[in-house]
Image 1 (cartoon, rainbow, N blue to C red):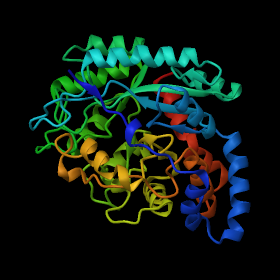
Image 2 (image 1 turned 90 degrees about the horizontal axis):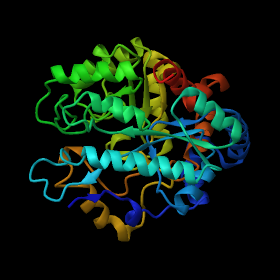
Image 3 (image 1 turned 30 degrees about the vertical axis):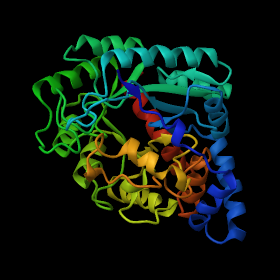
Length: 379
């Protein structure tokens, strides 16, 4: 029997004022912050805001968190289960087809049951309609490729609403090598065939958790615009999940976008990790390839990662060995200060204003870049 990985028992969302206090260093003097936040809020409200890796619970508490965000679209991960006895396989067996189908049905039902707040995000038009109606559109994604060797299962999952699919998680699968795998073999022949089938049906090809060569192969072999939904810049922090400048250049050449995660071990090697450090990654991509290729992929619950010291060991037990290699550098707390609650996207908007980004460019980072790719690939 397997069990779902759940952050419920280890999450304790901090208050908005506490998060704001963390965000203030990125906004300058306290006297200036209020004006910046007012400008940010006005820009945020009129923008399409998309986070291509962002989760919440399928319950009333999750709905209340989502209502606070003002998000236009959140892309939520489905089908993940914690293997009972990894025995060196880590999370390789944590993405079964039956679990993936089960979660597609559950999330589609949850969206329908909460139709005054949520809407499905199966196309760019769905996202625009959700914005007009004041709803949050939910896009469904897989952080692995749970097709069990059958390309036709990609078509089935598209029919169930999946619009983003990673070619691998951290470990090797039939498609290629993951980011913490010992080898760096790249995509297999079957992996290339799977990428092409995703292209045909309109599923975004994502290589966020893939190894270096697999990431490059996914970008190069994709016939449609590829993405990296949630990672950070290897040039700023040498973490196995981060992407090199070569990856970013190749992605941009194909018109792709990389979402930046707030997982602090990927933002910066040492504590403290603040919104300033996250903004450095935005700056790096913008200087390297331009502002058209960066967006949000926070990789956290809307409410954020836990911070209560009493939950430290429980968290590390859930996210450390034997499920993740030590090279992943899991630690506690795991969130980025100033970006660890339901207001993180608004604070980031203010931080971008403070750094001198133009309103039109900020809107690209908030969601305009993702919308361009979604319209091109998903339709």
